Amino acid sequence: MEKVINSYECMFIVSLANGEEAAKATVSKFTGLVDANATTIAVDDWGKRRFAYPIDDMNEGYYTVVTFKSEGEFPAELQRLMNIDESVLRAMVIAIDETIAAKAAEAPAADEAAEAPVAEATTDAE
Image (tube, rainbow, N blue to C red; front, top):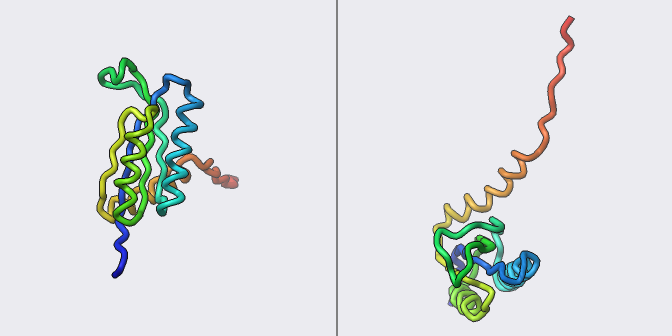
């Protein structure tokens, strides 16, 4: 039987109660888990953001979006592990279309191109 590989996107919010460094460690833990069990397409680190409403008496959290391809069993396991971890306030894993995954893969390259310094053209005017 052939294994089906689908594209997924996972967004999770990590608590800042223990500091931003602890939040980054939790993000690294879950992105490493995705790297070990799936093919990572893009990791978009949004950083610290203010909530629209308090979650567990907190007003800010550390946002991360990971786009990856994997077999069907891994996203459910990832969601389960995120629900167990007390430092993850909210998490959601969804299946996405291949075209959306392709756009997510192109986005980091476009961001890097926009940040690259533009060489100025010099002309010899006489």
